[in-house]
Amino acid sequence: MPITSPDTARDEDGAAPQEKADRARWLALFARATRDELDDAIARCSDAPQFIWLRAPQTGLVLVQGRVGGSGDRFNLGETTVTRCTLRQQDGVVGTGYVLGRDAERAVRVARLDALMQMPQHRSVLAAGPLAAISRRLAATAAQNDADVAASRVEFFTMVREA
Image (cartoon, rainbow, N blue to C red; front, side, top):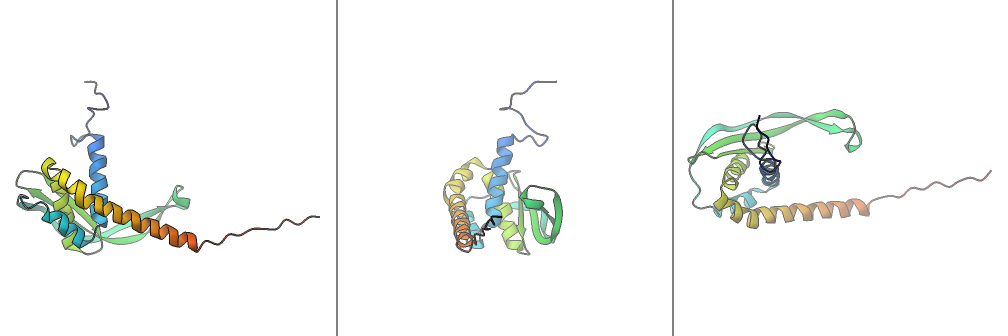
C-alpha cells in the first residue's frame, strides 16, 4: 500500500481535500446568490462550452435536521423544497446545482457556474468578481441581521435577597 503525504492525499473521487472544501464553499455561495448575480457571473464566461443533462432540474423534499443548542443531539426539524440538477460540459467537466425552493432556472445557473469554476481559466475571473461580490453581500446581510438582533436584546437580572 503506497504511503501518501497529506498534500497528495486523494479521496475515491480523485479530489484533494482542499479542492473539495473550495468547491463546497463556492457551491454554498452560488446557492445563496440571486438570479441577477448568477446571470452576471455567467455573462463573464462568454466562451463557456455547451453541456448535456445528466440530471435535468428536479424538485423534491429533503429532511432538515437541527441540533439542540446548536451543537447537541440531532432532531428532525421538518422538510423543505429543494431543486437540483447535474450537467456535463463538452469537455467532460460535471457541474451540480442545489437550491432551496422550486426555482429550476437558479439550479441550472448554479450547476453551470459549478462546472465553470472547475476550469482554471474561468475560476480566476469568477472568484475575483462575482463570487467575491456575493460573499460581501451575504456578509453585509448577516452583519445587519446581527445588529437588528442585538438592538432588540433584553438583559435580565435577578436581585439577591439577603436573609
